[in-house]
Amino acid sequence: MNIIRTTAGLFILITLFFTGNASGAGRVYLDITAPETRKINIAVPWFTNKNLDGHRQRLGRDMADTLAKSLKFHGIISILPISQYGGSLKADWKRHGVDYVVFGSYSITPKNIKLELRLFDVAGNEVIMGKSFSGPMGQKDKMLFKFCDHVIKTLTGINGIANTKIAFVSRVKKTKEVYLTDILGKKLRQITRHRNLTVSPRFKPDGIYLTYTSYHTGNQNLYITDLRQSKTTRVLSRRKGLNLAPAWSPDGDRMVLTLSKSGTPDLYLLDSRGNILEQLTSKSGINVSPTWSPDGRYIVFVSDRSGKPQLYLLDMRSRKIRRLTFEGTENAEPNWSPTENKIVYSSLRNGVYQLFTMNPLKDETPTQLTVDLSHHESPVWSPDGNQIAFAKRDGKRHQIYVIMKDGSFQRRMFSFPGSQTYPQWSR
Image (tube, rainbow, N blue to C red):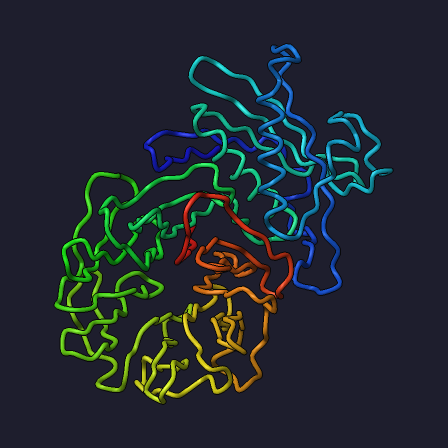
């Protein structure tokens, strides 16, 4: 039994009540990285409540739909349409080609909801995992996301990302503010209210704190806010000029920040309280957009020291710097995968920004992920390293899209009004 405190200070009670073979040492996980692997076919019938009549079962249908969408979001699962079996709990799953079925039931009180969810293996004819969730009604989506992540972990051995967070900047009229939401965009939360220009949100590795740069005082200052509350924020760096886009070290103790206090935008190493520890670049063009390797040894950043923005690798032990990119008019906005030595970045090719990936520690040809004629900007990896979110620009409007790391399954994440940029992904 686990008790988890949510960011709202409430509690969700989670109880494991079926284990089957899912927790066994001999469990064989599905390899989702193999190019020939087909998608896992799952059915999610409507959840049932025996105490309610048919008219009041809409909640069960809505919750099943939310779980199905969060499973499908992972890019390795296809969902059997309800229309093919009418939402029945007793369909001929084998005839429909279903691998697994999620059965759900629930009960409600004036303030709380209790969910019981089971993952059924059709071929093995057994329940291989199940959990019971209990908590406030307003936390039901969080419960469904948590169960989704358990399903992904059970089938693949890799933690799911349904319960992760996406931060982004949204422009409405002339102001830009930072917002936070879930992967389906169901719960939108406004983080900043400066009524000015706010850019470059960055999570600390713990996902509890979020930094961003705002112009509302007249200078481009860096701020940090505790996401467990929504009333206060504090300044991390208010040095004259740029205080832009920190890259937090994997342990969260340090950050690399672009400062222009001496005139030229250079990279500086700061501690978590905003004190300068070291200047990393000096009078060598504009140096921006740092990103750390998962082991904390390397940083990739952007510099125009060669004339055009290109990517460079900085060894944090030797402080040696070498150029990484030589193709494309411009190469910018690198982001290092949290799970492997691979970066994704935006490259200007034939007048269009496309997404590429490469291993910065090896001499290899970059891999192009996108080919359509819209601009693809500000890419960022998902916490499991399997997907990439980015801002797609078509005309004057940006919207947040996501793509698998092999370039497949590109789709729009949200349908919010206005224009969305600078996505950031955190657990």
